[in-house]
Length: 97
Image (cartoon, rainbow, N blue to C red):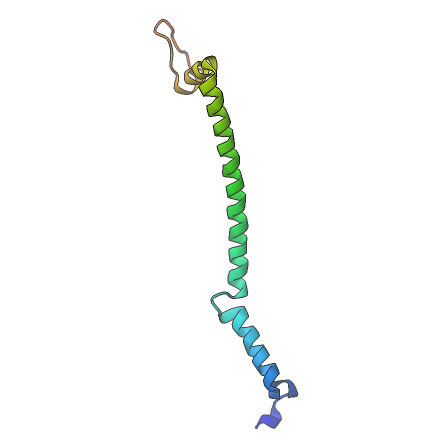
């Protein structure tokens, strides 16, 4: 019965090695397919982390400028929150696309 098999399949080490490779590539919880997916997800999360760190740095810079410069704080409040003095009127002009 074993004589009909090719010589590679009669060798115990070759069969064990092949079985190990099949197990590691397809069946294990840490198989290669999952590793590639997790690697891609990690790269995506690292790029998002860099993006948010840049945004945090920008917001901290803007906050520092607003807290130290009274005129800039007033300009920001007027533009962003449409605040005004009691004697002023606000006209909002929206451009159409």
